[in-house]
Image (cartoon, rainbow, N blue to C red; front, side, top):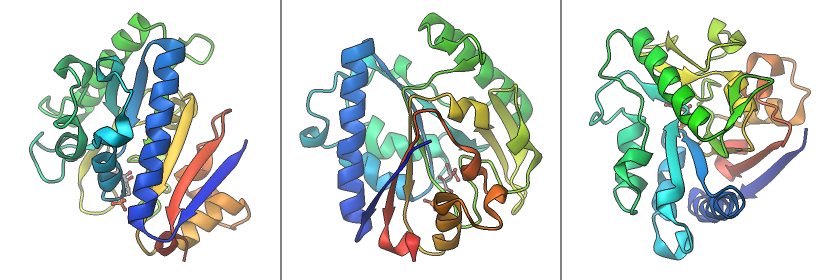
Length: 248
Ligand code: 6PG
């Protein structure tokens, strides 16, 4: 599996170039398949990328009515909470482009308890991906055109935390879990879903992540297997956008 790494001096240059890259992939997908299905990530690293992507100069040529948005993970909190990954993406990007409301598939955090919200999101995805003819029949997994991911300072990616049992999930598309710290409930797509995507892009900035990134990228860290990102090995490879602070 090929890994391509683009390193930038700072978050600003990283966000401009990754936004251009993502815009290019969206256009390619629309040209070849008539649509682009994206899974977004949360956290602070992608926010600036989404803001750049909302700039008409960068998204020029994208027909947003052909773009469909999902979330790779979500915190189990209200849609207008500061913690909500949906709300971050809404403010930074979705509220600024002419994407139809029905193309936005947020995690149904209003459903209780969290495990039912996860089951419902899986059902919503099944229906959508079947209708789009975007299910890999052999793997029985949805095929996203683009998956965006990050890595937290504790080594989590999406809401897959090192050592957590959901990292080994093979069949389910979406599960709920408690984050190891803070007892915070979350909902996440599983590794087989992320591995079935056409393009997987990691966006990583911020300090304290160097050891994790090196371990995942160089494939020789003794604790490599402990990081869920090491298990994200789609056939199409992964592309990484990192800034200097992250790889230090
Ligand atoms: C989340 C995210 C998560 C994110 C990392 C990185 O909800 O926690 O989706 O997987 O990618 O936490 O976040 P930072 O860029 O803020 O470090």
